[in-house]
Length: 42
View 1 (cartoon, helix red, strand yellow):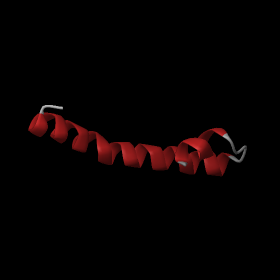
View 2 (cartoon, rainbow, N blue to C red):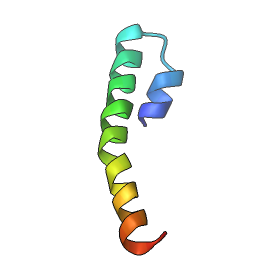
View 3 (cartoon, helix red, strand yellow):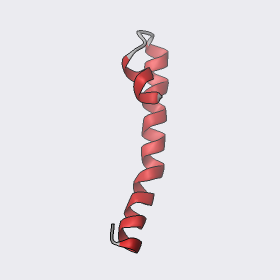
């Protein structure tokens, strides 16, 4: 949904919020992906 909010609306405050959400979620999921790779060799 944040990706859609990044590209579809024209309002800059919505686009900034979407960018912030994406960055925050990326910071959370990147370590999890690394752990999964290390632990389960996937």
